[in-house]
Amino acid sequence: MMFAQATNAVVATTGVVDQVTGAFGQQADQGREFVQQITTWIAQNGVSFALNAIGAILILFFGGLVVKLLVKALSRALLKTKRVDELLRTFLCSVASKVGWAILIVVALGRLGVDVGPLVASLGVTGVVLGFAFKESLGSLAAGLMIALNHPFKVGDYVIAGGSEGVVTELNMMATVIATADNKKVTVPNNSVWGSAITNFSALGKRRVDTQVGVAYGSDLAKATQVALEALKKVPGVLQDPAPAVAVACLDDSEVTFNVRPWAKCEDYWAVYSAAQVAVLEAFEKNGFDVPFPQVEVTMKK
Image (tube, rainbow, N blue to C red; front, side, top):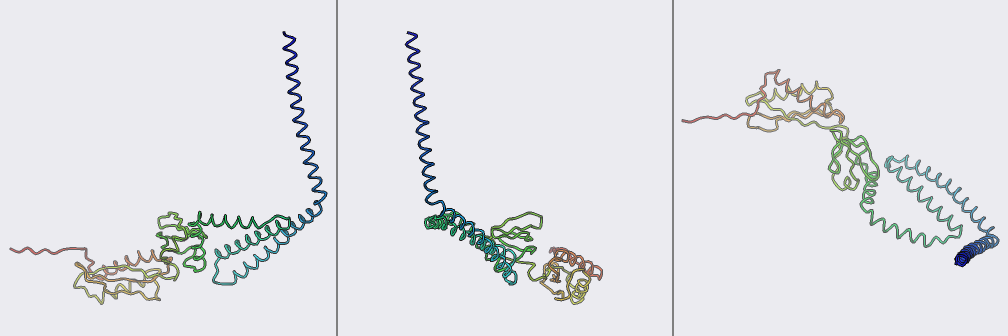
């Protein structure tokens, strides 16, 4: 019985070995067939493929040089015009470079015998799908292009844009970065910036400082006006052209209110705003003008 079991084991092992040997033989036959196919293809098409590959490499090499030269020429041309800033110039040169390389790749693939028609068609469909998927981003990109073309502000300007107020610290094709007065960094998408009113406090170089101060009823208003104007002339940063203006604004309950309006450079605005009020107040007190606080007179009747 043990002899029969051993015989069966030997037979089973022999069967497994035969299966493994047959599998290896089949794989070897397939490998030899594949090598033969490659050898045949090389013999028939090797020379033409090598020539086409060399042609494709030359197209990419010399075409890349041409694209580089054209992009440099475009950059120099845009640099000469005053309507195109650094942001738009960089963007246009980048787009031109990418388009040039895309054309070169398509031409090189065609040289290798690749049917580029379906590839171009699929890229078109993919572009449409991506356009719908990233319509908000594309909107910001288009808005960034409009900002670059129209120059409503530049880096360093103090603006109100997209609901945020502060100094523009960075500007790209997708977003505008603003540093607020309390040093917060706000990144505003360009479609929000271009889709709303933009107030640029720095564009014209000068700003009018609007403050108010009051004197008591019964004061010499002409003298008060002259005193305020003389005080403004001594404030550092106040411009004489345009000249400061002081005039009665309204008759309030407890005082006659003056509009005090000096002019200053944009960068000096807040310093002048504070110093002008202090200077006028001190000048009024020095010249005997009463600067009243809100008060109510009550008369009691029997």
